[in-house]
Image (cartoon, rainbow, N blue to C red; front, top):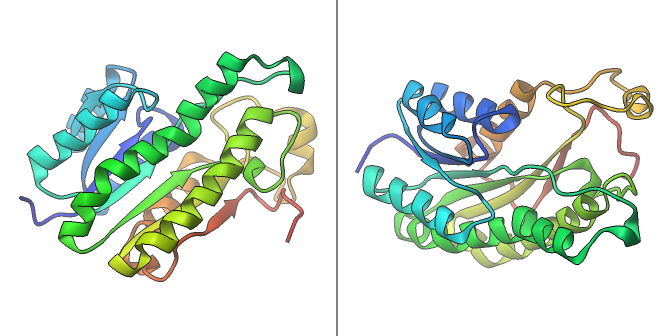
Length: 234
């Protein structure tokens, strides 16, 4: 058992996931990281934590992640569920296999992880889960049909989870980043961002660290945008 808070971060070797890992470690968390790349073990060691090689789409890999945290540290205080990107394509030409893969990646990974960590959080009297989602969860776009559909469902799951477990001191929110500096962005989208630029992963990591911290203790069941003002709905 450790006196430090323990944070789990998935898809943690690059981009938002790696930035979140560094931010939590800097704020005193013992971090347990999951990613498909073997680089995750080196990053975790650099941050004083432990890395697990695996995929969020594989239930057994998530089980190993949670078991590693429990065995090494004896507690789980925060989970940042980050993922990769699902398939894109013409709406009705996306295959069943691609939709199912997207379901495993974006929605079932969060549900499975919640099943695994909630018993620990109940025993210790609280915890926080944050799902890294997308701006398309609130404004679906034909450029990203799978992401738009399933991340919208993820927001609904987070609200249901909050309804069920808020009374036990366990929170779940979704953070909806806009376009990032870590991948190419079409000119039409860059021009539409009111702030005139894409986001840096460290900016998203700062919000993520806040949302899993005690400072956000009264925020749960929410889908919070960090998109530079791009989405128009209120």
